[in-house]
Length: 396
Image (cartoon, rainbow, N blue to C red; front, side, top):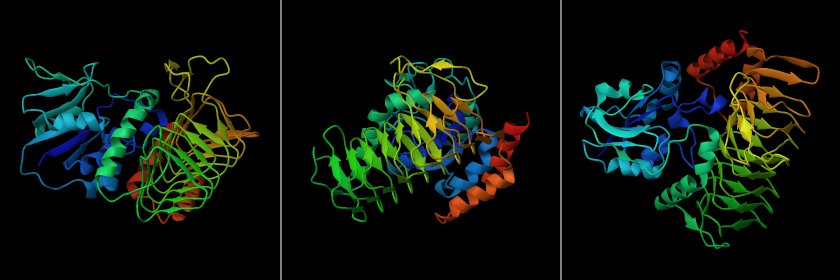
């Protein structure tokens, strides 16, 4: 059985989503790579990341990492590798290295003592090595991942079906599955003609909702009545989602219960989007979206005409807020303007009469109240991590 280590090489920038999670924690398709590794039978024996994330990662994922360490040689896989790339890595011989078309490391079999070097930016195969080149690139920015989302999602959905605990649904297109412990209420339409649809364990699809594939409705998630969930959408575990959502990845534990549009975007955990709030994912000029991943970040051409943006963990969006194309909303931001700016820094308190920093004690009271509604308590390492991010964001 393969001993596997997932590493974050620090070369991807997902804006505020990278402040609170490493690459192997990103829901880059239906699953994170921690979840993928477990589902394809790898024995996860390590997670390699920057020191700033170490305590938080150990606190959250310690139970997912095996203590087995009898073998010194491990299979090290990039935290953002796709399922196809992970399977390709498993088939590599000891002497092989897998890189993407840009030369970025995807996977290598190596001694455990080399893991720190592998995680360092700029690591290259040893002299004389002949790397195998993957057909696909490791995503660098959110828009790169959204470009790959449909393909990654279909791979992951097939993997989920292979677990054998889902029942087929008689729907348009025939490629839909539900866990036996789900509820699908009267009037629901599931259209799988353009891609697979999975309704996972404990999910509830309420009256007259429409779901088009490919789509993943995660465990314990509730879809509100009359919602429209369009293709290439991943909704993580324990979310409450309504309105129109399409081309999005929602990490988990987030709320968008009411009407309003969210398109071509990535949303973190413990986010709340109020009733009637909408984002734009297309410019009025139909041109390429130019986006920034934070107030101090450069503006970058995304190569996409449809790109909504990113919303960091613990952000709160008030009712009727209009979110512009290519937005970036930081961790813990509170936004209550009728029209939000394109970039909002972490822990920003933004209302019509006040632009200030969100006090950390007030922020924590809000988060503890939200998390308690789902029966979750924030870990001490995560609290320390957020307090450090708050200090960095508000020190200026």
